[in-house]
Length: 190
Image (cartoon, rainbow, N blue to C red; front, side):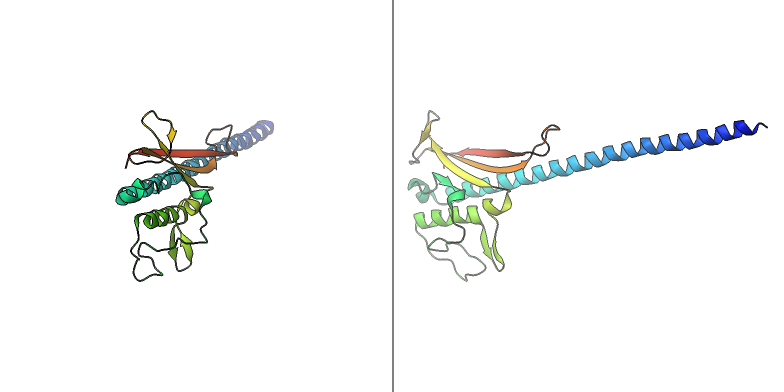
């Protein structure tokens, strides 16, 4: 047996092993990239679910307080303008720190609803929930439109446009690190 031939075969096996390791490493990097993208899409889906939940919550509060809607108390709203450190004058619903809710007029109930949707409910450790806490850079705005679809003052019978906006990382491969604003919008006529 030729000793040079055996050395060539040993070297050839080493090259095969290095190539196999390189191919495996590339495959594992691809799986890691897919995992990161999957987590990003999952979080985006989670934030959209929260936006839908908060929008539905606000719409249901409007339907429950029609006199407040007729007073235009639910329109022309921006959650960014709500001061979460200052509660509204009356607590119109049961909370952990109040034994019984107060009886509220339509405007007071609307003020309370707007506050809760923006800031959440009081808990033993502070406040939790609301657009300001649950969504990254989250805001909710409400405006009214007339039958022609143009902006209008929120009078009785007009459609209300509820828009929730938040920030999330870009989802395209060229825009993975930049923040983009995402909107969810619902139009209702309470």
